[in-house]
Image (cartoon, rainbow, N blue to C red; front, side, top):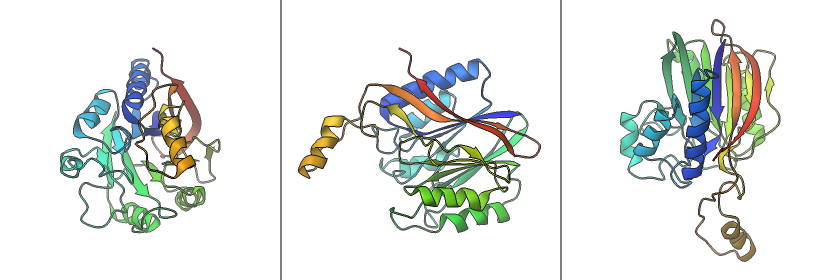
Length: 261
């Protein structure tokens, strides 16, 4: 069995801190073999930078996925080209910098990670269903273990994608809403799924941001600078046990790890 950790949206410095603390411990205890994390909010809640990506890799990440905030840090448009294990959504328009999937060999097992971005209540993009179908049917040597990060707003779209891919990939894990869902499951075809992994960052917040600032905007309708909160820091995600030979997931377990100071 291969043990895989998939981590929900890392938010700011608090999120990076709890990620490093948790993954370092899990690696030391040999509790995980492969780590995927959504890092599109790693830079103060908006995008990611090259130094932050390298920080997360040093902490134990194997692959970092991005979403709709991929280009919030302008320099990353150029930096992503030299970071093959940082992937942006595969259904970005053709010619976008970077790539939408990556295959890495770990402990003799080929693991492919695919990033997708939803279209419901999001900016218009190419179809994520057709984008992933093209990868699965046209790309050789993907390996049997295939993990999908579906970064989307609508629960229906994320569940629909998991049903569409059941039996064809190892796991479909949703991200973006920063709220962990309680619907982890293994579907009939052996694919694990969860609608949203949750958030890795400060839980004493409004999806990672300072409560007073966000409340002010809701109450007054006026724009306010949303600072990343600092308290109640936790890591959200799932632990998967995967059959290396078949790529089928044998178990999926939600986790929530508090930062130990």
